[in-house]
Structure formats: structure tokens, C-alpha cells
Length: 96
Image (cartoon, rainbow, N blue to C red; front, side):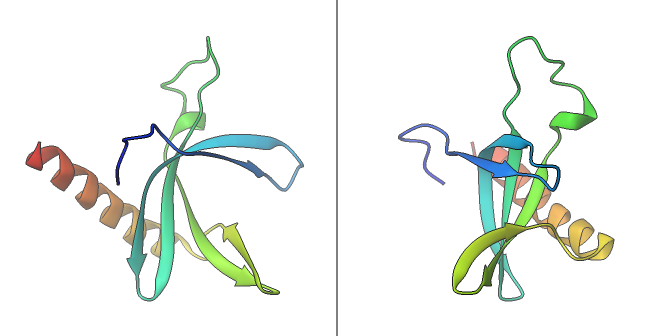
């Protein structure tokens, strides 16, 4: 992914109505599904090492003709996709 223009940010709304700003890390296709990895934008003065600011993985779904981001369906799916993202990240580091 090119960072020529800087990072990409999106704002999502959780089930409680809270807006969360996320920075897109990368995306991948797996089993016909598009997955995206994000890091929450850390507000100034916040503890970056908090569990609250770990990687967030969402998948792209189409509902009523509209593209939406959704949580993953199972712990197994999350583990499998997380491992794929980690492989990609470490592969990118090795190439630098």
C-alpha cells in the first residue's frame, strides 16, 4: 500500500453510538472476502500501549447494495485473518 499521500483514516460508529477514528493499515483478500486491518487513532496524551489501541480487523460486506464494514463471524476466522496480516507485516519489514 502506498503511503505517498499519508495514512488513510475512517470513522466508524460502534453499537453504542460512539464514533471511533481508525487508521487503515492494510487490506487483503482471503476466501473471496476482503478484510481490512486498522489501528485506532490514539488521542494526544492517551496510553498507546493500552489494549484499547490494538489492531482492529473488519471485513467488507454488501448489505442492501451498500458496502459496509463488519466484525468477523468467529474467533477462528479472526485468528486465521490476524495470522495472515501478521505474515504480511513481517514480510514487508523483511523486504526493507
